[in-house]
Amino acid sequence: MVQLTYAQIGGKNGYDFLQFPTSSRMEALGGNILSIKYKDNPDLSLSISNPCFLDSSFHKQLLITNSFYTDKSNIGNIAFAYYHPKLKSTLSYVMQFASYGKFDARDPAGNSLGNFRAADFNFQVGIGRSIRRFYYGINLKLIVSHLEKYTSLGFATDVAIGYHHLKTNWTFSAIVRNAGVEMKPYFNESGRQKLPIALDFSFSKRFKKIPITISVTAHDLQVWNLKFPEEEQTTSLLGASSKKNKRIEVIDNIFRHLAFGVEVQAGKPVQLRLGYNHLRRQELGVGKKKGFAGISAGFGVNIKQFAFDYAYAQYHKAGSDHQLTFRIKIDEFGKKAK
Image 1 (cartoon, rainbow, N blue to C red):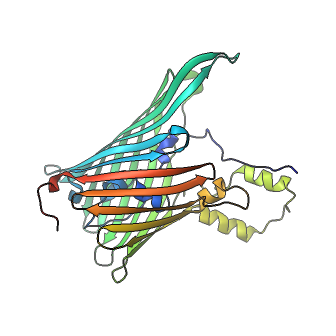
Image 2: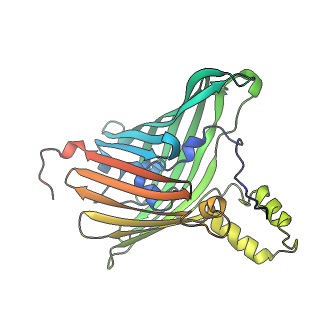
Image 3: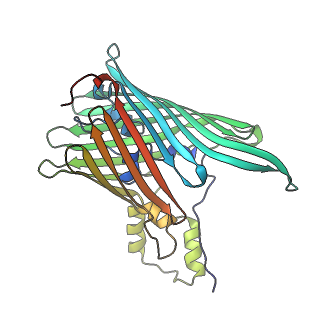
């Protein structure tokens, strides 16, 4: 008996680390852009990817995020927000990093040449403004990627618009992510790589009578078909009929564009989170036994000036993501907690 497997296509874009979740909260709620806005609990980590909701409530908030992936890979960020009275705007300053550990260098004959490292960095500045219930913001990114002795430089931007209704706690945002260009390729002969540009819509609703917030994100809307050719090939080789149920295919593809999240306020300081990402489940689950691929969970704890968030997401049976985020409200030190 021969078992066939497939993997997602790689090599289409450069700087793919920009697509990883920028916070534990985002990872726990499905792993995609969120449009959650809490006036009583502003979370700078969500504004790293969605800058339109940056406002004065983020003033002097510092955060550190790190994800522990398989094989000693670490991806995370350090961010700080500051409200500038002269600009009447809040700016966020972010350093995003991805470290992939050590690799063995070999010549064409297979002889060892020692070790080398690979890492990516994104130095980002974001700004947000608002007009009544409408919000808009932009991130500017300088990207540095280093692989052995080769270095690539790039520039990208995120542009976001949003709407938040304070009384009903209904929030919407639309964002174009990672629109830019590779300014300096790793080497000239390789040509310039495309960036992982994406169009996302995000909705959230926080209920008043029950302590629940639901969120839905429609992601990668710049492409309709998210099913890779390898999946079609595998199905054909296994002897499936060429006349598939088109309705099922369409429904499956629609859900590949969607990620869902539920956040429950379990007492004043604790939040419990659960998320589902259908694209991850379809791409990374193995056969019919997909396990917990595409499912994520986590929690958050807010105590006075400090906040701690944790998320767990299974990408595949062979590897999962454990993500931690620490938030500190520097300007509240010395003040009594409300």
